Structure formats: structure tokens, C-alpha cells
Length: 133
Image 1 (cartoon, rainbow, N blue to C red):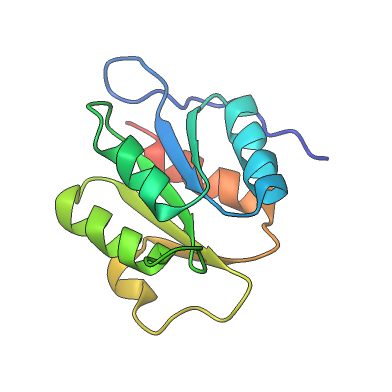
Image 2: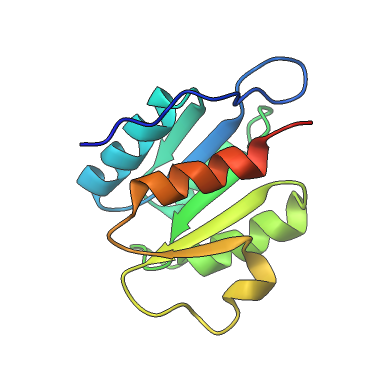
């Protein structure tokens, strides 16, 4: 397993940037969350959109949302991405799927990644999205 390089992942104010990983497959969620943590991010995890919405409703801001499209329950990852984009426009959104990207993905996401994840590319993109000058 690759280990992400620790770069500057500090958000304004000196605290690590927060990434919310929403993935219903526990092994994929764990792998991505572990690599993000190793890269210096504060990582929150959710197994479905309802759990993600609960985490998002708390006071701590999320800098990047990474969500799978296909999720159990009545709402999928695209619905979550649209809600985050509308309510927290400063939050960066990455959408992932094992299928081709949905037609509207470019309207709600900063990036789309196919699964299985290329962890190096995803981590690098999150680092670029959260880098502060």
C-alpha cells in the first residue's frame, strides 16, 4: 500500500484541512481515509448520505467532500454533492464511481474519479484543493 507524503495540509488558522469521505464500502473508505490521515488531513468518515448530513450539520467546516455516487438509502452521492454545493459553496467536492460519471457531475463537483481509487492522484488533488498561498 502506498503512503501519502505529508505536505502542508493546513487550512487558514493553522488547523489541518478537513476531508469528509462518504463511501459505503468499508474497505475503500478505510483505505482512502487512512491515506488522507497519513497525508496530514483531519478525516471524517460516513457510510451513507444520512450519516454524512449529520456530520455536515455540526459546526466544524468541511474543506473537501469525497463521495461515491451509488449509496444505500433514498439519497445518493450526487444528491449529497448538490446539497453541499448549494449550502457550503466554499467546500470542494470530489465525486467517485465505479461507473461512468453522471452527466451533471461537472455542475456539482470539482473532480470526478473512477473506482477503484488511484490513491496517489486523489490525495494529490485534495492537497491541491486545500493548499493555501
